[in-house]
Each structure stands twice: as C-alpha cells, then as structure tokens.
Image (tube, rainbow, N blue to C red; front, side):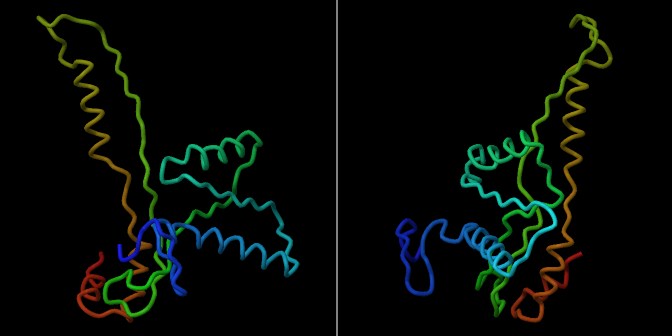
Length: 178
C-alpha cells in the first residue's frame, strides 16, 4: 500500500483505502441511473427491485441470503438480474494506455454433494466384486473429472478489443487466445 489501507485518505483525485472502490461505483451507478430515469418521467412496464447486500466477502448470510429469503417468501421471481460487475481502472491491463472497464465473466462459488450408496452386506473374507466404497470412489472420481465447463468467449472479446491500445507483449498474448 502507498497509503494507509484503513485511513480513507481523500487526495482530491482518489479515495485511498481498503474497499474504497469495491462495488460502490456499481451501487451509485444503479441509483443514479434510476434517479435520472425517474426525473425524466420514465415509468417501467414491470416492477424493478434494487437489492444491495453488505457482506458478500464473508458469505452473504446477512445480506444476499436475507434478500433471497424475503423475495422467495413473497413469491418474487426475476426475469433479469444484474450482478455487481467490476471497475473501470487505469493500469489494470499492463501496457494499455487508457482506462479499461473490466468484465465479469464468471462467478466463484462451491457445490455441496451428499453421496450415498446402498449395497448388500458381506464379509471381509469374501468381499463382493463391487463394494459400496468402490462405487462411491468412482462417483467422486467422475465428478472430479467433469468440472463445470469454462467459457472464455466474453474475456476473449474483451481482450481482442484492447489490442489497439496496448504495447509490449500483450498483443502477442491476445493474438494467441483460442
């Protein structure tokens, strides 16, 4: 850090501090857009919900989870949902001359599986050809060998748009995206 990460220093151009840009630009952007639309007399054809959580970095159990429960309890289902996105940053892409709007192309997360196997019992002196633990091991192996597919199209398009403003090795890298 070049400034105290917990200082919140404002130098006229930047706010310096941990979390100074983390999603605040999106929240303010959404609110400004809605305010502009409303002041121009826009009336949406359907309901619009603006939901903002506060604890996504520590599981979202107080923010997103509570919002999801409230929406579910009230029978509210979305046709479209926009998540936080990323920032517009200078020097985000090495050797690129202009600010770059970073594009979120995936979501991190986890999956929990409960696997169980039922087989006939037996005795260790005469084990069956196929044991419950063997069946379970093959299932776990199959899950591990078949991860969720990676989609790189959005990132490929983003990087290909940057080729005009970069120098150094980045154009070579972007040219090799398959």
